[in-house]
Length: 307
Image 1 (cartoon, rainbow, N blue to C red):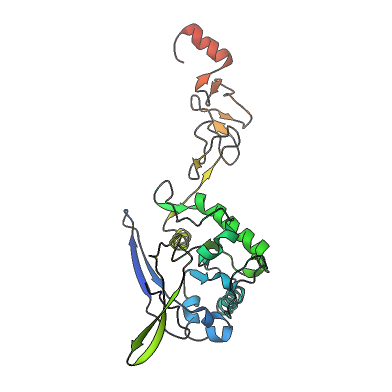
Image 2 (image 1 turned 135 degrees about the vertical axis):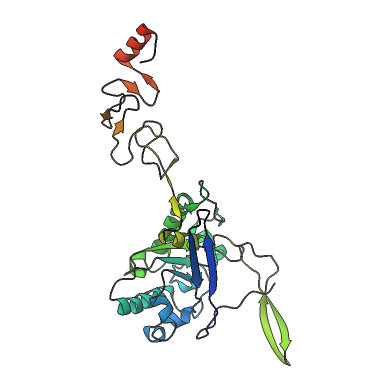
């Protein structure tokens, strides 16, 4: 199978259009413009036609390969003469701020490509890059799965490269890091010679079928930032230790305490109770056990009926 060529510098490519429609008929049109990193290596180049796409966009996906990072000597990846990602990100910020007179407010997904090559340095030697799993509600960005991965990428950049997040993303107000793989495996490249109009050319071939990993995640994150989809995460109640409570629930379903301050309202009499109160201070109902306690329990037993 032939691998597609990288985006040619200084060349216009047709944009990709996607029109998304949700079940409630809410819709959104996405237009993707592909700009080669070489066109973002200095402000002068961005002052040409390509910079307009950045200036007027609603969000960005910055895609770079592992060899575009200044790395620690322990990270053994082939070096190439290519613009460093820190230079590209800094140039985009300088250009954007010069046009808008503000920090870069565009939500920016910063993506390490060829994740199959660098996964052992980011995830650990025993871990493999897995594809995105749908959120439990089937319609939201899966922050529950993404957040730990984002932390590992930040840890890798801060500890295994010659830079840190603060210097790379200085001036960006909304950004997240991603790791992905278009192929899903580290390819063994083969060179094939072919002929066109009497001229011989070489192209890169691979033997295996592509199995992309996590390529949809940065797009889903942008949809979250655009407000087109929601965010799915979970929390653990610090009072009763109940786990896996959806982030959309502000109240623990077991002990009824509010996530923000721990206060809870008695489901039987409506009395507000303090976080350290196990049973309702008015009717002595215990929401965790689902029964009354103390005097009310004895009274209920004596009367032989529900109150």
